[in-house]
Image (cartoon, helix red, strand yellow):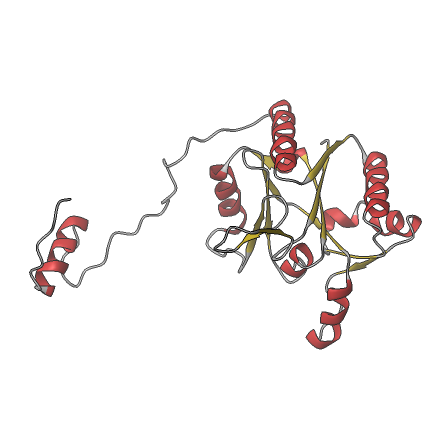
Length: 237
């Protein structure tokens, strides 16, 4: 193995770094406006290509232990949600206050399946909602972005779209259309940049299948730091 030389010369050490990054003493490194530019291959997609991405997402998500479905319309969505509610014996659920979820009349679907669906936030005071949130058996979210190549939900957070809803309940139900599907990480970063600029959300949650936790002895446990049962309902555009 090659060995370096320990000189103990702190000034020489930093001088070498400055030389390599071409920055004079006291100066600042040049600002790079688009640090992601050129790192990935940009690929725009058509509606037909996104249907291919849907199949890829379902394949990846299912391989990881999740459940994913392609659905033609709201009627199929309502039937699938009813099936999930009965399968998991869900009595109480919570959903994001997302405008796309508002359009789907989910409250009626859950009511007909004899389950309640509350909307986040449950209350303005932390002490008033934390016990209620812990009792919820399912969280329902709208995935603004879904990455097909790895079967990953991308969930930018906000006051109305709390991380609590997508990781605390034992069951997660994510709903989105094929319009939210992108191929890979470049497209995710591009969408986040276009949408938020430099004012990114405090948290953005990436969920790839059920939560998996392993200790140093490689004992795998499912559903410790996130949901154990995860469902992705993908509506056609």
